Structure formats: structure tokens, C-alpha cells
Image (cartoon, helix red, strand yellow):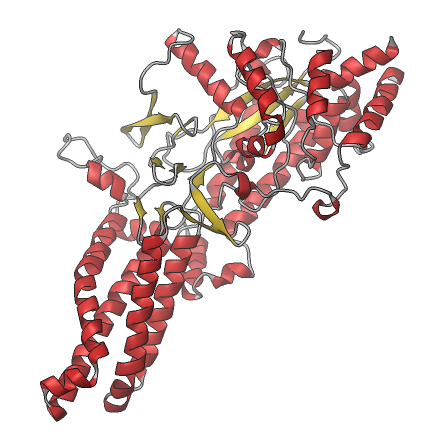
Length: 437
Length: 144
């Protein structure tokens, strides 16, 4: 116990000169802490400090926005006055409500996380690789598509392995090649909204196209009404000359109506049968494939399917865009793992200054064929966070005695509910540790 | 000698290995973890305790994702207020996630930490796995 105490003294004095204490707030640090979105591995764009998330190509989204704003703007400026006078002032009110709803749902669809699955941590990826190698009885040779079969409600579903994200994709998830992310319940990548449509924003997308169909039909109908009523007074051609904007609106609405109403109808069908666009296009659950083929995710009746898709609980974002990057808990050193800070795929990119050291280590590790349990050569170094806290619970002091200070600190900090905050390892630290090892 | 020893202790990691409990998709896409007891934990933990932990977690996630009157009400209210209502209140799912975090903290303090194990909240791993970190047992000797 005494040795353990003196060990703690030495450890803490070493740490305090290099790392930050856990009590320090991010703002007092010299180097500002990075948020996780800044090192996100996918091809997404983030705005407003990570609050807004979109695809890389957003040109078409701006076109959508401009089309809607211009058409509605023209409608409210040129047609509404006439209609309010001649018919009823409720028309512009309804128009305004529809317009606001359309814009709101569009922005919500475009700016939210569609249900991106974070990539596997190196430890997870290594564990999966190990399992796959064991299953295949070979090391080194990578067999073609890795799949796992699972039976869901009586249907056999194949789960594919994603080589980019290093995970077995959950059922209904798919990898979007444009955004380079796996997305849960992937429907499709919509360039018009500038984002993928997946589990978390499908309802907003549906509300958007539904309300846009109503808005388009509404504007189309009332602009035609305006022209007809006007032409009854002053003649058709004069009516057209009187409000040229109306002509533009009619043209835009006419061409939009077919596609948008058609799309709404299609998605209504998809929702009622609880399918994604992806599944429908591939014919995954089509009875044409085989007589026993049915959709295992459907709840059986249209009403429940609709309620589940539109009013079900909204799952949280799994990628924590605005969280601060923190070096994770003590690291393992499986053969494929290099440096200790590779706690998460996000944090690895934030420690760019040690990349060269890391590459060297990985190259070294790649030749090592030892299973990661054997605690060999490159051992990850437990993360230290400065002045250690006093053990608060009996469990902690027990752990400290038996498993070491680092372990106890982990448990204490986890128990406090926070992660471990730290500054990046300095290259000198790494080299020192490697030398000593 | 004592210094070298303490320096080595400082350098030596406490982590022996990690076990990953994968998702169980047999009931569909709901969040559920496999209850199969991993062999690496045999020396440290009771099968019963492990299964109880995972089962409780599964039940909590099922509660978060449950389709029912209250979730529909919440969904409709959110839709009517153009989802601005979530600026002032938490979603049901988020409330249950907090509950899960508390539960995992309790489990770590009471059961897992005394055995040199650490449960990581699945939300930190994108709800893909339950990560259990196994710490080296110094009494037994180092893994080297």
C-alpha cells in the first residue's frame, strides 16, 4: 500500500507538469479544445459550430430554397392582394402558414443529422477483424464480402460489413457514397435538400414534400383563379399583361406539381408499408422474389406503420457533433493499434502532430501477429489527467490498490459522469514512453 | 530501484483487454444487446450479474423506443409546434438515455469496478456495442 501511495505521488507530480488537470475548463486552456465535428471523418459540412450538418454538395439545396422563396414571394406580392379583396383574406393566411411549414420542414430536413452511424473505434474494429479471422480460419487473406445473417421476425436478413466504417451495418442501414457515412434506415440521398434522408429526418422530409405538394397545388389553383377572375373583367391577354409574375408562378407550379405530388404519393406508400426507397428499388421485400418474402419490419397495418414513422420517438444523434474531443479511457494495444490516444476515430485526427510516430508504430505493429490479449510490445499507455482525485468510494480505493491508480482514476471520472479531458500527448511524452518500453 | 519500479508502473497500462457485446438484431432494428456471456469475463464476473445488467439495459432501451400513447402524443405535439417544443423540453428518448447513464454509473460503482471491469455507455459507441474494459489484476501479475 505504501508503495502504491508513493507511486501515486510520483505519477501525479509527473503529470502536473505536462497535462492539464481535470478541473480546468476548456476556456482557460492555451489551445482551444476542438469539437468533434471538426474531425468528423465523413464528407459532411458543418455550420454554426456543429449545430447544422449538411452534405458536401449544397448547390441544389439553394436552388430549391430560391425556387420556393421566389414563387411564394411573387404570390404574396402580386396575387394575394387581388384574391384577398375579391375572395377572402383567409387565402393569404393559409398560404403563409403553408409557406412557413414548408420552409421549416425543409430546413429541419437539411440541417439535421439523418442518423449517421459513427465509425468503429480501433479497438472495436480490431475485435471484429479478429472474430472474422477466427471464423474464416485464416489470417492475412481478406475474403470477399463479409456478411452476417440474422433472422428477423422469420425473415433472413444479410448484414453487410462496411469496409469504410469498419462495422457490420445494422439492418436497413446503408452507406451513402456521397456523404461517406453509414446512415441508419437509409432512404436515399436527396440533393434537393442537400442531405441524406434517414432514420432521424425522414418524418421531416415527408412533411416537407407533403406540405410542398399542398403549397404548390394551392398556389397553382389560386393563381389560375386570379387570372380567370381578372380576365373576366379586362380580358385574358390584358390579365396576363397585368400580372406577368402570375405566368411565371403557373409555369413553376405546373412543372413542380407532377414530380412533388408524385413523390408524396410514393412516400405515402412507402410509409404505409414501412419500407425505405432503397428497399423498394431493390425489391427486397417484394413477393416477386419468392412466395415467402415479406417485410419483417412492417407492423401489419397501415395505421401503425404511419404512426411509427411519423409520430414515433425521435432517436438521438449518435455522433455528438458539439462534444469536445477527449482522449478516451485507457487504451488497448492490439496489433493494429498505434498510439494510445486512438480512443476514438475522431480524436485520432486531432492529434496530427504525432502522426509520423504513429505511422511508424503501425508499420511495426502490422508485422506483429499476436492476439491483442497477450499484452505485448506496444502497450497503450493509460491516460493521466493531472492531479488525481482522492478516492471517493470504497470501491475506488479497492480498485486503486489492486488495479492501479490509472484504473481507479478511470472509474472515478466515469462515475462522475464526465469523460476524461486532456490535452493531446506531446511527441516527447510518446517517445519517452516508447524508449522506456 | 523504487523509482524505476514506480516509473514502470507509471508506464505500464492497466488495461488488459476489452470485450465488445454486439447488438442483437433478431427482433428488428430496436436497440438490444446480446446476452451471451463472453468467455473473457468468466474469471471476473458472475454470468447471472452480467445477464441482469444487459437485460436491464435492453429493457431501458425498449422503454425509450416504445411506440405508445405517450410517444405519439409527444410526436404530434412536436409536429404541431414545428418541433420548437424540443428547445424547451427533452425528448422521451433523451430522458431515458440519462436514466441509462445513471444505471451504468451505479453498476460500475457497485459491481464492475470492484472486479476491475468498466462498462462504457453504449451511446458513446454509437449504440453499436457495450464495451467492457478489463483491467489487469496486479495481484496476479502483469500481462507481460
